[in-house]
Length: 557
Image 1 (spheres, helix red, strand yellow):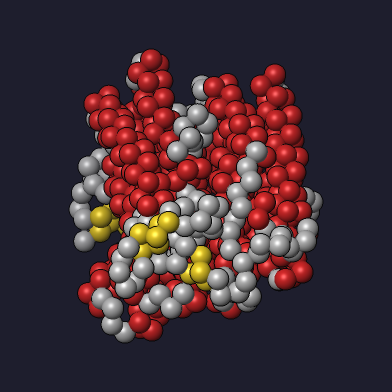
Image 2: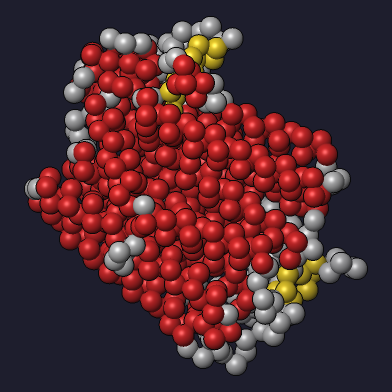
């Protein structure tokens, strides 16, 4: 049995809350049971499940925007001890964007497995792990208590360990080891923080904590706030907790790198948004957060400018642009939070797209080393277009959504006033200009200049690690110095090609179109972000939906 908030149509919407978590987990179990059999059926299951999750997410977002937060209490347990699932405007928007992105990345991965004639690993390992990852992401967005939030993170991270080390190449194992150590450390810190919160307030339910934390001594409340910020800062890869990211993501297969870079760090940003507004309102740590935002923007983009490898360059821009989101959270104003929400949705889509394009560039040019690429605009005009559009979007060229999101944040910073806010506005402008410079460098080196004389011919085998294990003898054959390093989903060498897989290119184009839709639909999306920000600041709708009418008065700002 379950307790549902609302009635009528709203009651029906609330019954959908478990589906974004349950459907991918169920499908992963079915696919593990099937194993290597029925490949077409397995692909249909994966695609159908994620398409269904997208539809459910849209229904939850529409319901939350129209009728207020939707809540489901599992079993007959009260909110203080039971599992509560909540979908408000913020979590609904994050569900929709993440579902759309993960669906496109799954289609891309299906195309990559087909292009590599690599049928076994994508079906038996990649697809189940990927579905479990999606379930973990959805659980974190819907979690109504800190412990269920922790469970969602662990589901997500357990699957990510498998995905990051697919194929077992030496480079992926090394990168995976770093990622595992950092993730385990953050998980331990998260458990400690949850224990501290429970010891101080007697509950881990977010709605109850919204009222109880305000009754604690200010020093205890500040300690709890710092503990949770540290945990989510590691997961969001904010400076100085982002040193692990540039070395962990670029070695993974393109679909894995794309969904990690585009989505997983934003789960951390979502948690910062949720906890800072619901549990610790008032912006007590506004100045430290502004410093962190500024350093994240500048250190990240300076690191990107210094890179000559496309994947590492994009990884550093990821760290940099997390700073924009922290900027909006630090302002703790309606305009700042609305800008942060808009920018999170924009960045998930655009960053994922760019990493998928990097995978296509690697397959066409044999490498992501910009010094060894060239002539791609002539060799593959469509590939040039699908890079150029999201690159300009990330750089914030008008009238694209990247410009609109940054403009909203800069306006909120000017309205906030004060030395740090004005410094952040200036830092945001400088970061945007340097982002444009870094991406223009990619365009000039990889697309615009003439092709290098040592460009690999179509059909050239691209080795996947420092050594190549031959199929017949298994002997390690050292690669020549400077040899490209790219591999299939199972870690086997792949070959360059003159034409990208239509499925891979189609999925990438779909994400490009989704990013452009944020520009076309900027008005409605900005309005939704503004309403989400107002709901976050008020807190009353969330608390009343979970605990019942009247309880929200205790936390009214």
